[in-house]
Length: 232
Image (tube, rainbow, N blue to C red):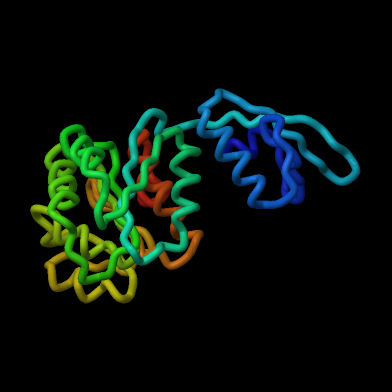
């Protein structure tokens, strides 16, 4: 990992990122996200280890560099959106967030005409039906053989928009399980499930959310997700 390459060890305290000092975890996340968003080949950090203070450098891999990710969110706030956004930025991809209700029509049309590399659905109820414009976008991405993903309760909404869902392997939140079965998909009960260009997750906690987005971003960058590599 980039942290290992920088020589970081458990218990190290990072005090500055790219010349920006901070005092808490929120400050660290902001400084790190801003540095990653600039997609620099490397940026300096200052590390405190015991009584010693020394400089080092982070050299990100950016496995999904220049890929475009569109996140569509419903009214039900998904608690791990910040984790997903940070992982997307750290991968080198760009991210834009649109509300499912009354999204920017011009941005939605542009995305439908030129589908992003990944469309991700979050924060929807299991019985939610996607607005016509969002449904058209999902179908455009599917036709373009692009990547689709959904988390938690939003999985059934994505499944309804797909041209063919029968026998697709999917997972979701407990609330979304029945809806997936009714649509003819195969509910696997996994924390993260991949089937072709589709990745779904239960989204039950931050660790699972991070595993989910890394699996999807790894495939965008032409690599394998951890589960696929482990099976082989």
